[in-house]
Every structure is written in structure tokens, then in C-alpha cells.
Length: 273
Image (cartoon, rainbow, N blue to C red; front, side, top):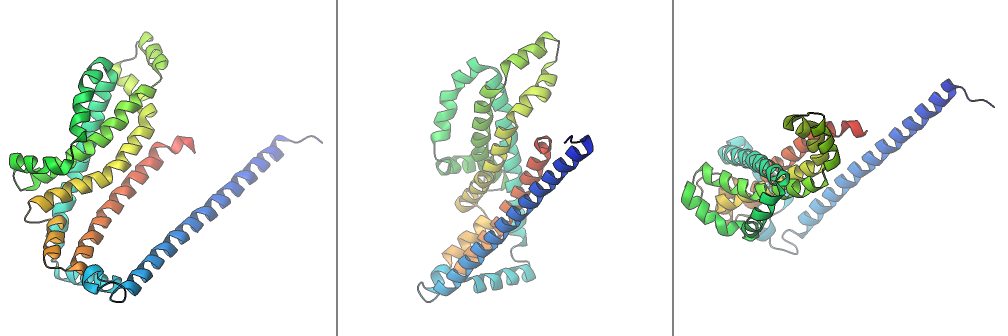
């Protein structure tokens, strides 16, 4: 029996719809599973509070929610949240841009890269919390020092992703474009950046927690405002609910940035779907 092009097209469409339905069911199942895990964790936490572990040590979900509602109503945490959000965004973007630029530069000039790689590795091996006091000494206890620490922590994550990713760029294609007179900007736009897209996405996602760590370390060491300062004050007062409240607001920042990276990831990889 001969299959017409219309019938073949209908079969392909039917299979594509079936795959989409299967993908949707899997996505729903994963979302439900995540919700169940979170609810089980909260239930176990509530059960353990003041039964197995003292409430002053771990507080409870109910007390934390009550505290979050209180600080939102009073506006007590508004300035601290805004300060940390600004430091986080500036430090994250600064570290990403610096790591991307230097990674591209040293990847494009391997001799210089090999010359500087031991120095960069040595600096990266130093715990960032040990360099925090020096940066605070240089930049003061204001916003600049927190942004500086965040840039430093994010920079190395992005730099190594790009620097190592440059080794996978198809050099034959680059050379071919050069023969046909393509400019450096055209080569970067059409070959290098598309080849580095997985490395860039990895650096963007991996840099988020490092930016938070950098900012909070700076606020723990020396600050007069910020979520790190809020958490430190709660810790000094043995206020577990206050500590978890500060952590909850930090999670909001992380979730928001992860969402932005996910949106960019879907946009930049749309051609693969």
C-alpha cells in the first residue's frame, strides 16, 4: 500500500503530539513530586520542633511564617533585602562579565593563558573568606566591599567555564572563516559564542550561589545593613525564627535569578527544540 505525503505528515504530527503529551505528564509528575518533598520536609520540621529538638534551636515553619508576615507588615527587613539584592545583582553581573571577557581573551591567546593560569589557580585556591577582610580594608564596610567579594567569587566560576570551553571551539571552522575574510567580531558571534553556550549557561547557573555566598560573607564580616547583617543580629540574639526568616528572603533572591537564567537558557537553546 502506498503512503501519501499527507498520511506521512499526519503520522509525524500524531507522534509529535504524543511526545508533547508525554513530556507534559512527566513535567507535571516532577512538579507534584517536588511539592510533596517540600511538604514532607516542612511537616517533619514542625513535628521535630520542641519535641525532638528545642524550638530555640530550629524554630518551626509556623513561627517562621509568622515572623515573615510580621517583618513584611512592619517593613523591618525591607532595607536589608534591598541592600543585599543590589549587592547580589552587581556582584553577580560583574563577576560574570569579568570571567567571560578574561576567559575569552586567555582562551584566544593560549600562550598568555598558560603564563597566567598558575597565578589564577593559586588565587582561586585561597578561601574567599580569607580574602574578605582585605577587600573590606581596601573598599570599606559599605556596598562596594560586598560587591567586590561577590565579583571575586563569581569570576572564577565563569572564567574556568569559558577558558576550558574555548578548547572545544572548532578551530577548523574559525580558520575557514578567516580565509573568507570574516572579522573577529563575526567569528565570535557566529562560531565562538554558539560553541560556548553550554559553558556560559553552566557559569551563569553555577555563579548564583557563589554570588550569594560572597555577599553574605561580606555582610557577616562588616556591615550595618543587609540580610547577612540581619541574620547575624538574629544569631546573636539566639533567634532561630529570625535566622530562618533571613534565609527565606535569600532564597527568594536565588529563585528569582535562577528563573531569569532558565528563561535565558530556553531562549538561547530554542533552535535545539
